[in-house]
Structure formats: structure tokens, C-alpha cells
Image (cartoon, rainbow, N blue to C red; front, side, top):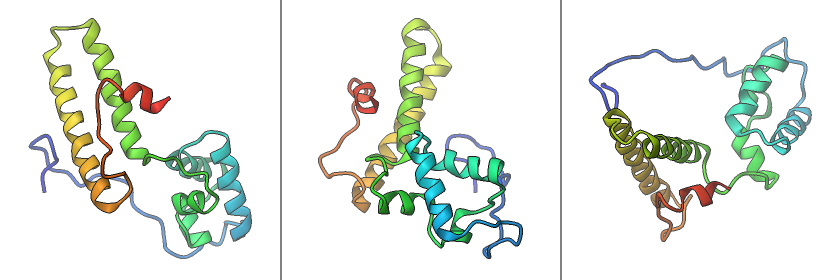
Length: 150
């Protein structure tokens, strides 16, 4: 299957680790949950927590140890953010492109990139409304997007 906004095909990407708990990991379930909460309180997003646990602690998968994903742990402890992380990162990207376009008005490639990014935002917004993650009356507006992330 082709990529969303290009004609390229491709299968490159990271491979998921094994389902069972690796033998070299000495963390128990409660310890791992406490570590995830500690990293979240330091301001890390769920994907950053996973990367930090992988790189600093040698934990290939939080789910293999706890039986729950990082987001599930954060929701249980009521630390999860209101908006999903992928949605926030797309909005941040759109804000950065808009800022660039305000200084470089003739950059047609950036304008196309903004169009594609905002299309992804609207498509994801539609999905999150359908699944109940976002309120039905929530909408993306480029003018208030910066205020939304503060």
C-alpha cells in the first residue's frame, strides 16, 4: 500500500519486541508503573516515556511487564493529557509551518505541507470524535490552535 501523501511504497519501521517479559528486565509491575508515573510528572509524553525506558533502563516493552500500555497506566493514575499525543504533535507541526509561512510568503512547498498537515488533523479529528476521545462539538481552528496547546 502506498503512503498517504506520496507515491512511495515502503515497509521500513521498527519491529515490536517479544510479547513475554524478557529475562534481563528485573522490574516488577508496581515498580514499572511508578517509574512511568514519575516520568510523566516530569513532563514527558507517553512515546518519550517508552523511549526513555528503552534507552536508559533497558525495558523493551512496558506492556510485556505490566500488561498495560503507557497510556492506560497514565489514564488510571489520572495523569493523561486531554488531547491524544499524535493529535498534539500534528497541531504543533501546523503551528510551526504557519510561523514559517508568515516570514516566507513565497514558499510554495511549505504551503502544500501546511495543507497536507491540516488535512491529517481534520481526518484524525473526525476519527477521535467518532470514537469519543474528543467532544462532538470540538473543532480545529488555526487561529486558536496556539492557545489550545498552552
